[in-house]
Image 1 (tube, rainbow, N blue to C red):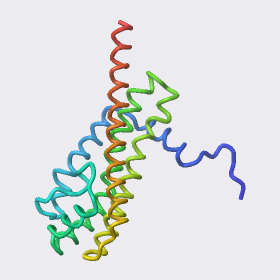
Image 2: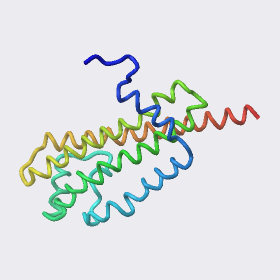
Image 3: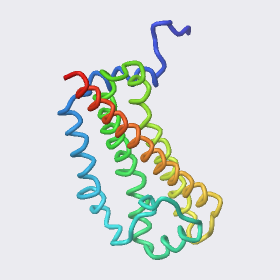
Length: 186
């Protein structure tokens, strides 16, 4: 079946969706949801007081196994459930907040750039999901070592955090330029 020229690939369909929903109330909703996950949703999993691996910027395979051993069998089961449920949704939620924020700032400042830059936060989702998948694979093998996969998990975690920082810098820079433009146009 031939694809019609008017049909756009999924990645190009996302930016009109973001453009359509981009508003201050939508941004407030996604920020609120982003805050609820660490405050309410993640603690429900009962992983204990041990800081999850994905909150570190990087870690080694040895640190992964120390972490998994400290969790214990029940903690590892809870961690796996969290990685395969709420921690798959959470990156989408906070990436939506970042995407909407970028769209709100950039659509007047740089209309052409907003189309693509508003999709940038979804690269974080991909890195986060690969991080989760890698960690689940390592947990399932525990106590056997899967150092290569644990190394990939650490790399995906570092990539996720680098993308978050880069997105924050893009957003901050955009806000500074937007404020400067508003002051100049007074």
